[in-house]
Image 1: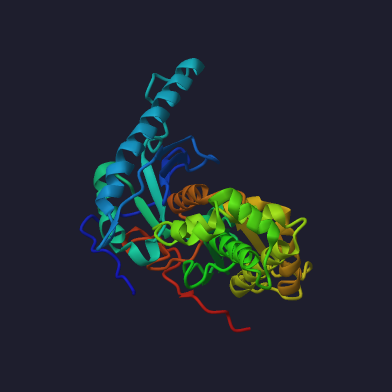
Image 2 (image 1 turned 90 degrees about the vertical axis):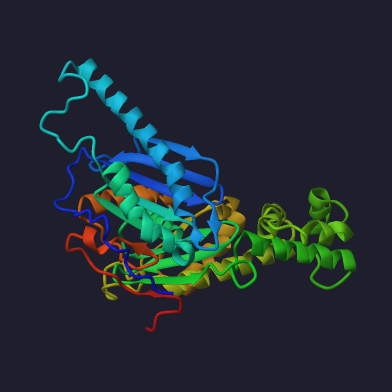
Length: 389
């Protein structure tokens, strides 16, 4: 579905880029709650962060914009107050200016930009795109707002504003890449249709091998059967424990570390992780941009950054993934993410405030209301199929 830009009932003209002392807010909304970070345009890292433990509700109309605001606005005001007090205290210690005054820096206490990344934004974010820009303008006087899919904030946290690809792995798995002209996406279709190589996929494959051993079928793993019994109890009771659960992907993913723990001594477990690595590398290869200059000095195909809890498994997964990436993307640099999705949201907010947001706009992946643009690049496409060479 394509969404039109929201009506400009609260037109907030972007104007000139914000000063380096202006505040920006980054927001990460996911299944475990809402995280908010406050920073300044000209300073790296957050000044302060806070967490709202209640996840934002999703209903028939998509993500509930009012519920998000009910959590975000008090958190933002708390962070701004804390930062104001800290700044005033620092000025008093320096004996510089009267408390609360920053002569010559009128933008110091403005919120110049907010970037919100949310799980489900691409498919369930219509209300957020329609309601949040105006509501944030009214409540905080925000000059610029960006609304992003969580895969985009994961990209910004992992890679920044460079061309490349990011693989976000946890319970699920999605790969996202860009050449700064358009987005390319692979997988992230949920545990029934995809997420191949993610935590739920690995856990299910491990449990399948355990049940095969229980039955005496080929492909079974006695080591994984032992771990199944230790974690869940008797193997024959597992269906009754698993199938009624509404959080089946998370339950499946909880067994993935057991597969990694067995991989060193058990060839079946090692084979599962190698197949997972193959799936992950294939997704990365589908989205990684081709080099701008194929005959360049390094001859590489760019950067593939890994982010998310899946990769905390370490070498049992990373080693075969490194091999698969070398086979499919010769010369690509596999890196560890420099920041998480909250870091990415804050980076997007800073770039937007400074008039330097280079990541591609898209009506559902990275939405910036047209009236807030400052001549930066317009909307672009997002592709879910491999690029033609």
